[in-house]
Structures are given as structure tokens and as C-alpha cells.
Length: 263
Ligand SMILES: [Ca+2]
Ligand SMILES: [Ca+2]
Figure 1 (cartoon, rainbow, N blue to C red):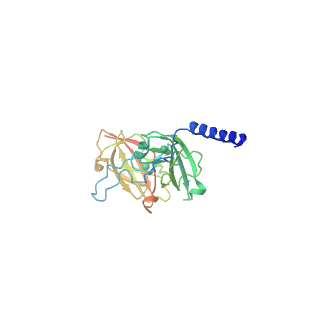
Figure 2 (figure 1 turned 90 degrees about the horizontal axis):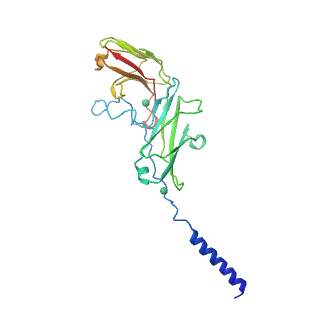
Figure 3 (figure 1 turned 180 degrees about the vertical axis):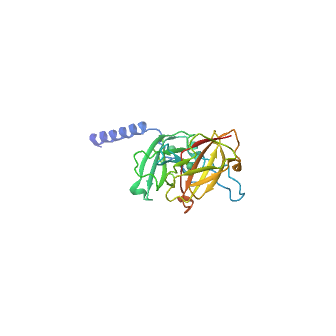
């Protein structure tokens, strides 16, 4: 064997041994679990059709994708929620990318809304529509992409909800005080494409107390008839709902909140 061949062989062998020796520990190739975003499950005050009773299990916090007040009277924000059980079990999630699109064309319209650090006990995100011009009368689709520490990722499934205009509250004014037997006019501005409204009363800790469905933009309420109690302050708001095409294509909005005290 020629000396040059032997030298070449030794160089290759040396390079091979070096590579083997320097090779990093086994790289993680296991992607994050697939996350399921929670569709719109219902609204505060929904009637359980089986029992005819109000379903207390639905609150603003556990109803899936939903319109939430933005503090602006012209539009709502959008809350999305997911089941975080499997991600927590993965144990190596680093961050989550949140994406949205509209018109149902994910290839054309998808926008990265935010990159949020992963926190096991945080399973929701509120989209404030930063920089978006037309927010209401638009169906918004969302999916999220969790990444692990080795940059593996898995797309979640997709949920959507259509935002209606915000009902502008007219009467009674904020912090009004009324008699428990008084016939009080609750009124608000019409929301285009809304098919019904719901007035919702909460206590001051924001626990649901009672609600009433209305198909116009005003209603007279005698607080005693709704089981409200004199000497107490309540928070009230108006939710607007659009036509229910199918569970995945629900629409709605919620007004600002006002307080009212009964004597
Ligand atoms: Ca992994
Ligand atoms: Ca809501």
C-alpha cells in the first residue's frame, strides 16, 4: 500500500473518530402533543335544554373562543382557549405561536399574532387586534403552534368566531340606584346582524346571578321579578348574538359593564 493511501486512510479514520466522539447527545425529535383549541361552547346564562335550568357551568372563563370586552366601545377582543393537559405532560415546551386568519383562506391571510413564553397554567390568549382595521363583522380563525426546546413544533386544530358590533348601552346610566319594585328601562343601540340580545346580571365578584333574553334593543325589568335583592349592587351587561349557522360558526359581542344598586 502506498504511503499516501495509508495517510489518507488514517486521516479519514481520524476524522470519523473525532466526529463520533464530538457528536452531541441524542437530539430531541419528538414534537409537542397536538393541542385542541376549544370551540365556542356557549354563553353565560345559556339554558340547559335537557333540564330547562340555567347551566351554571358556563362562565366567561370556560366557554371557549369568545368575544370579550376591549374597553373600547367600538369593538371587542377575542379570547381563545385550549386544553393544556398534554402539553404539560410533554415537559419540554418552550413557547407558543398564535396565528389568526379570516375569510377561511389560511394560506393567504394567516398572520402571526404573538409569540408567548410557555406557562403550564396559562391556557388562554386574548387577541387585542393590534393594527387591524376591520375587526367587527368579521369571522376570525385561530390556531396555535407550540414549540419544544429543540424547536420541534405541532400545529393545533382551528377554531373560529364572528365578532358583531358592540351594543352601546343607553339606560340606565352607570351606578344608578333604583327601587326593587321599580319598572326600569334597560336600552342599548342596535347591533347590525344581531338576532337576539341577553341582559346578564352578575354580583360584584362577577359571579352569574340571572339573565333574560330579548329580541329588541330595550326591555322593562322589575328587579324583584328576576329575583334580584334590595340592598345589593349588581354588574350588568348586554351580550349580542348572531344567527347560529353551526356550532363552529357562532357570532356575538358583549357591551361594556355597568353597575346598578337596588333599594
Ligand atoms: Ca420534544
Ligand atoms: Ca363573551
